[in-house]
Length: 70
Image (cartoon, rainbow, N blue to C red; front, side, top):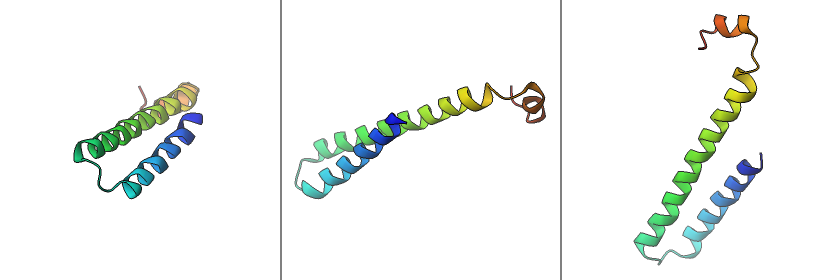
């Protein structure tokens, strides 16, 4: 939960950076954009792992076989 909130703050800071510093070098802008992309990927993997641990691992055996879950 905390990680998702921090990711939201990162998105806000990135938007603020691009609005306030439009004249920065392309390389620096690329680094900031890459950081946002990588953190977005990390957030997606975290959500998927959380879903797997808390939903799929706790699912009753009958239900998981009906859904063809390995």
